[in-house]
Length: 183
Image (cartoon, rainbow, N blue to C red; front, side):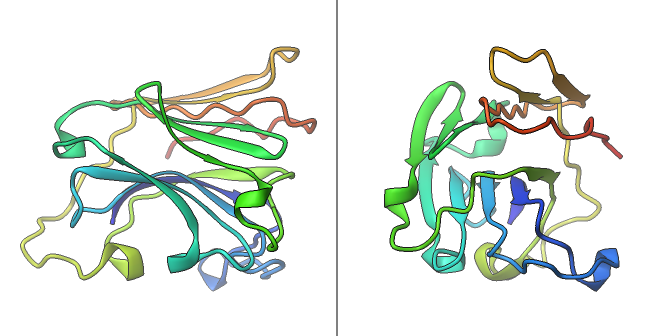
């Protein structure tokens, strides 16, 4: 799997790799996959939510098929997230929506702050076996990341890079996260 951009509930605390105590293990804290692209399915992207009772292969997901390899062009990926509704867009085209009834009777765990993560993952259960023909190192180029608040707030956070990636967050009723830092 290459190129996921996702949000994970702030109650989540990573395993030993980041040295923090596990408070709410995945998927209990919730996860919103803004965009996942799997190299073995090069024409498609996935927008997905994971939570208790709907995760991994049983997650609630939407797929957008470009009709050609995703990596042949630059694209804008976005999520509009408001109370009890999440919408996924690519290049301003709505391709997936989720609300509590889509995961019922399981809990909707998306009414709280989330961390934004950009991750360059290779392989795994979803991505499959790593192609031995792959060459490394690879590049994960990002033109910008934007996190928007509702229209009645002025906070805006940006990170600059080389490929288009955008994230929008609609009014949520909590404090904005700390500014994003690209390393």
